[in-house]
Length: 189
Image (cartoon, rainbow, N blue to C red; front, side, top):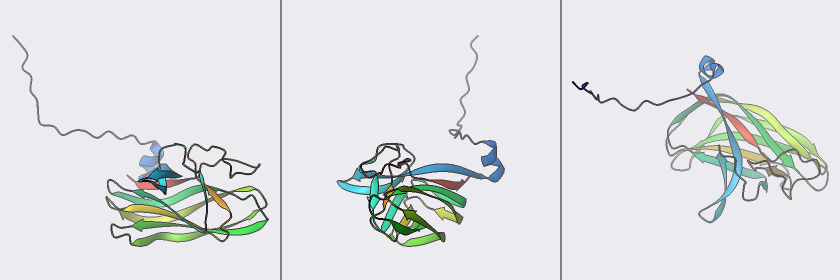
């Protein structure tokens, strides 16, 4: 006699993996790398979890935006630690940097998340690490909306490095550390 098989209409189970610290705090942390890539024939600055070689790997500007568009809603809340690498290959300069986070809705309206972090560094044909944290309040970013990292600089000749693979580029002076700038985003579980 054959054993009867019963199939129930059971929905698919989502598997998630969290460490003890994530469960204890209710927050998971994920590294997002700064990068630039050719998207629709345009060099575009993005935030990504993939470690690939950027198209250029650096940008010299007084105002830079790195975006990621959310496919599903997420809630962020907590301390976002960042490590940004900057370099110059010219004259000496004291440079003030501002780091801001924005939620960008479908109509491209920016809403700043948290306060502005300001860091001043001295350059003399050298690299510097912009290491700090921004406290991000409880913010929901919906599907189709963007999280934006904005980096401002008082000197447009200083380059922000953004190659997720950390390669040495033609823009880095002899004191090269890495070009893999990233943020460690706090995501509510």
